Image 1 (cartoon, helix red, strand yellow):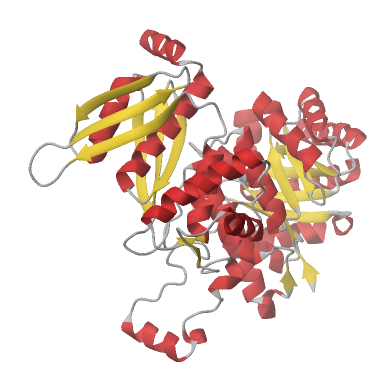
Image 2 (cartoon, rainbow, N blue to C red):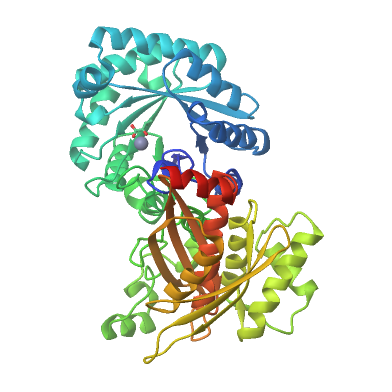
Length: 517
Ligand code: KIV
Ligand code: ZN
């Protein structure tokens, strides 16, 4: 059976999703998880666009073994050199470069002729191949290009040394059969294409990204580019979990498989969702909260008689509904440590373990059972705090109800040791808490997104809150979880504010600059 290479671009194209920017620590944590998931390639970033991306690509190139690390570059020589600098220490580096082939891009964006573009392709791939052993070349906007011109450009790239050629549906324009035909046309007409890896990269503007990618597989490509949860530019990229599980569940049809360790899918999905501040809809295939929930009487009846009546995959095969109850308030350090090991959590030192253990104890005091999901939430909250904490939430108290005005009291500890306290009224309890925090922190920002979800089941469930705030044209996500949804909301806000202060400078600078805008 043929193995399809899964080229994950969550950390590059995925991060290009509006508001989805990640910190270095978050990128590295997702990178490690992608490796556990078993992807063939991790596209770690676009190093020439920012020092942060350079650092992330270099860090992952040095740290992650047994996986190919790719980085995207523009076609200019200095961009290619800078990208290679970030990548060169990888065990298996892949230098990815891209040039548009559609007339609309060539004329309106690049202001070139087709002849100039062929020369540029040859020059770009030659420079890249002089540095890197593996070079991927992408024909951006291939699906709105003259297909004979795509053939000519791909042939040029292969002749100049590209080892992978990629056919993107950059704007999600193609229909599955049409996209399959384009792939076949290239397969049949590009000289030398049988000697290189052929890849597809589809966007989801019309909801066809996964279907188009799979059409490519049917026409013989051996690499698919995709992202966890389908995150990415505009409507996003093809969703990794959908492609992988389609290939696995319908092996009778596709006759291919991947190297993906599917039980890690849900964990990876949650990590990406939390770090990017993008909630996964409950009805999302494979990783959505309802993907294996049966609610109608007829379906439940069928399920009770025989699971396969209404399920085409087993939830545990994608990491849904794994081990549930394990720990409680009487569990000690030993049990928690063993459990963390079994979950594959990497705890680097005793202080870190102690902090995790104390968070565990706080939850265990308020919940009958502490599940894997609760522990994952603790670990995710920690990862969200992997930057300077200007303030720490010390106390939040709310009075609300169907009569009277919601009132909140908040106490914060500042990094200089000061304890700051204030109170405020609001339209609701969360609003009152945010107003009280604003009175203390006093950094202008706008709340642009707020969503609440249940991390675990039951009346004592841990609630998660994901928010986004904007300040000076930049967006910052925040996340918090607690059995009390008001506390989780306060944690999420503090998380976003600390991230804002860490990224934009100290509080006084942010206030002064905002005042002058
Ligand atoms: O969508 C696109 O065309 C891309 C390329 C860089 C592959 O992201
Ligand atoms: Zn893309």
